[in-house]
Image 1 (cartoon, one colour):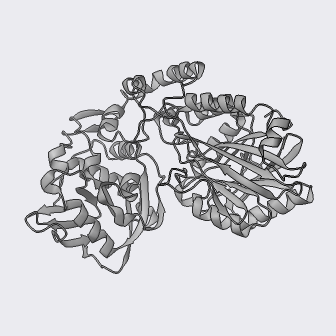
Image 2 (cartoon, rainbow, N blue to C red; image 1 turned 120 degrees about the vertical axis):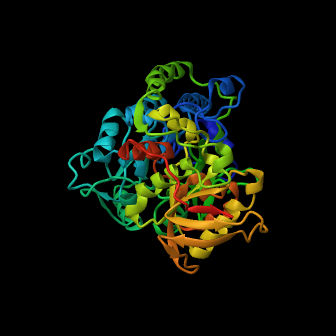
Image 3 (cartoon, helix red, strand yellow; image 1 turned 60 degrees about the vertical axis):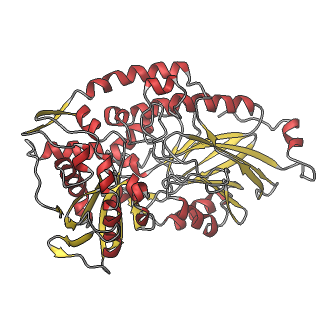
Length: 519
């Protein structure tokens, strides 16, 4: 970013009574893009060409490029910094195909000034992150990682960075969620340190160098960001990610920014749908005088950058071929008929729930619940293509793990069967458990004989559960899961998990085993 002095007009626009030394900085920021290289629909998955033509699409890298260029032009001569709070990786076939190279190319073209390491940057181990860092010119930072023993990263990922913007030094510090060891694959040589302690050390180091304006660019989630803003002395602004929090001043969402004392905390949802825009004014001592802004919705009013769109189309061509790639073999048709998967145990439900549980069983997860409405097709006998798997699971849902009581699980099952006579998509397909349902009973009292691992469910015990992020966040009436403990919603794509399970168990034989009994 080219440093710029604040113009006279911008100075006077700050208001009366402001000292001549006050300094205003606009922070443009994204987070959790999750490989949404192409534009997205209202469900945050890839938007089709017809919907794009009808103006129904949002986001995508080419739209970010357009919006970022427009903001830079509008703010010409003022102080601007462009930041990303991590997780451009994982979430579409662009990542599956290019392993971060596409995200690197387009983020470089957009022109970021700094990026935080997100947990999914470790999905292909330290090498995946190292390759990304080598492909971009902007610094990629994380301050609570001890990389001494990790040769691939110790000279690539720094604790912090100092940017000069408009003649002022802006310090950027960063922290990554310490549970990344459970949610990704950093390897044994990446050692995680306490976020607050590490950030305080980095802030103190910057202060000794005379840096008085410090932004924490974190990937820890909003709750932790708020704690950091309160606990770490010397942080002026927190720009975050990881929790995909929608902060919009629309009267319904969480307000943007959240203030912790004089520290503004901001996040810009996820999936490239918004461009965060926060304007902060500092006094001569580096204290925040004011902070205001609102994320910009990247809707159809932003025409995607033409050159970048052409490049995305070029890179997307092999992805269309990937959909034809054979990933497994099935010995018989796997029944995913809508009428079955929303009313009884179905073969596709067993496949997907088994795949989910198999992926996270080593984490102590015992139960899988998949909403029947998330299963959109059957798969024919013979070769199984990735395109077929994506037809069954088209929503780019991710695995969610969380912990709830046995009573909450029974409540969830009651919700799942409460509208089965209507063919509602909330019907629960499960693994690791079984239950009996009586459709003739009143909704709310239809479930009985719930068993987990062959034993009656304990209503007061806490169980580990895996589902998809839609269900965990209250979709299809599963509101009881919103308050789950230790929830993590950003695991691998459900379609990828299912394809890998099919391949591992091939040739796959569809089955039902009586885990759901309908009276």
